[in-house]
Amino acid sequence: MEKYYQHLVGEAGTDEAGRGCLAGPVTAAAVILPKDFHEPLLNDSKLLSHNKREHLKPLIEANALSYAVSFVDQTTIDEINILNASIMAMLQAIEALKEQPTFIIVDGNQFKAYKNVPHACIVKGDRKYESIAAASILAKTYRDSYMERIHEEYPVYNWRKNKGYPTKEHREAILKYGITKYHRKSFRLLPEQLELEL
Image (tube, rainbow, N blue to C red; front, side, top):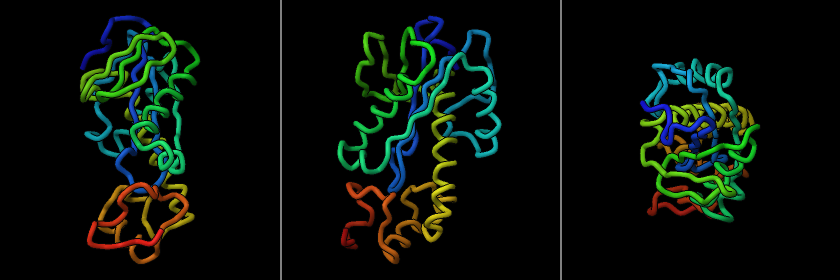
């Protein structure tokens, strides 16, 4: 895994989590790592176990030159669509960094310029660059914690386990109990053959 795309101190990596979920926010993180940081376990959060992500989270937070996490809620997702909400979350995370990045590397292929800071979009960047991988881990762990908290409010959907993703169990609960204030009404919450009154 590469440390820098441009080999600039202050290069920030950014990524999001929760884009494909039926409920809850989309969450993004931005991370600036120091040149001497190296952690062999660092990888795309989707390729890591829960325990490995939880092990890496405090290491990233303790060693990063700067990091920030941002949430964009389901109401905003419904208003501006998930792509725009994902980009908004990443931009908000970058804005919250305690130092202005010199360059931004983004996981994926779409982004909107942040101020006058140059950026590059990198498909599967969370498997190629350490700062994007670190951002993916923070976004995932912070979002998972959020979903575990709201699970206590609506335990029938089992968000503690599925984190809002469209599992069979989650969709069966939607069919049986309807939707909550956390569900994304602009998403297809049930397969086409089933109808849900919103």
